[in-house]
Image 1 (cartoon, one colour):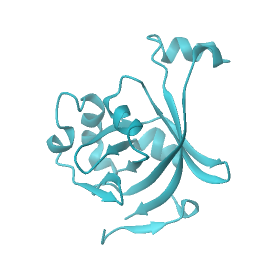
Image 2 (cartoon, rainbow, N blue to C red):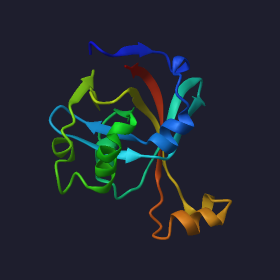
Image 3 (cartoon, rainbow, N blue to C red):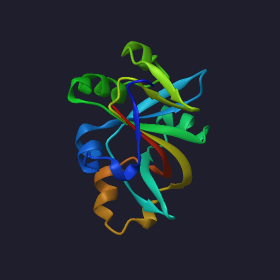
Image 4 (spheres, rainbow, N blue to C red):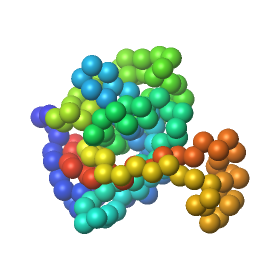
Length: 168
């Protein structure tokens, strides 16, 4: 971890709207035996229950969701523009079918038991606090259902404590 610096969530200089919505990132979860990752472009950060948190949304059919569900922690990591094709590949291929991490030559490292990739520029190490399945009945704006959930595959929302922020 020689080129990583630990900062507090409040010290993070990058705009979260840019990081999550435009730059994309990877959700990475697993154990030292098996890790999987997927792209993320929906989510947020803030304060909940007196803690700095990240909100992460994962559809039920995503293979990485099993890894997130089976572990107490996971990471949310962000990359520079040179990694765009790698992120695109990670989001368009399933870890069920191909070893995406090997194919993209990503280097898996761990912060305690939380996996992430050495190629990242920013890593949020997250501890799950809360999980809830989104439901059609809870949508006030029904246009969201029509536009984003034609197959009724509602995201599962995870509220996670940001335990550590690593930056290069």
